[in-house]
Length: 149
Image (cartoon, rainbow, N blue to C red; front, side):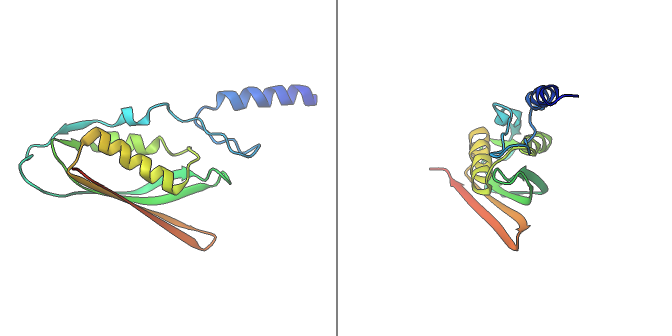
């Protein structure tokens, strides 16, 4: 096979692998769903007059470093006090999986997830702690908080 044919096949393959990180030419190109927040579903809070706390731990969050293309692994801990809506857990799982091949920095993904959940739920308060596994001897934890006004 000639180089031109291989190059054309390579280009076609890169264009069809939607959602995957290209590890061929930095900077890494990511194609993600246009609106992953649309995956989030809610249900009515049966006790809206009561302040109570829901804690959700997602120990298998993955995304991709946009600089190196290497996978990032983290534990996400959501703590929130619902107002009228609660998040449906299977939809949250699917939403979080939409980041699996997304090249996004820790700080960006943590803030984006909080913003999307706040937009869907309108909670009284919400905190997200994203604790990422060490890379090169450095571990990172990002905490973001929302308080309704």
